[in-house]
Image 1 (tube, one colour):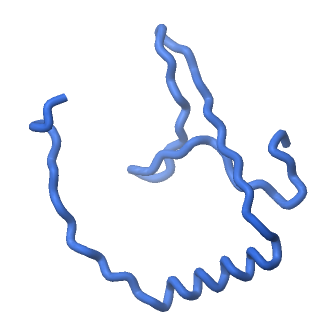
Image 2 (cartoon, rainbow, N blue to C red):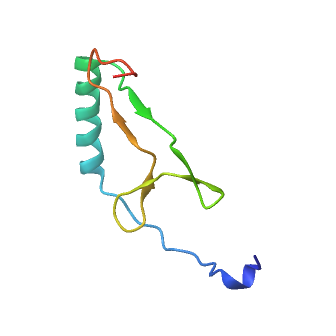
Length: 80
């Protein structure tokens, strides 16, 4: 595709508040101390339709897509 069809721009820098990040970091540290490393599982689902391979993505919100999967519970294996 030609670059003429794309809009290339620059966004202004967004300042983040310092209070919210430190609170979240404290929660994550407490969670790590209690449960250990967070384990997640993602999967790729291929579908063959109309003589083409398609990858299944889940849409969360207007502009956010992700692979199917999620967080594993303590003691749960990848197969479960």
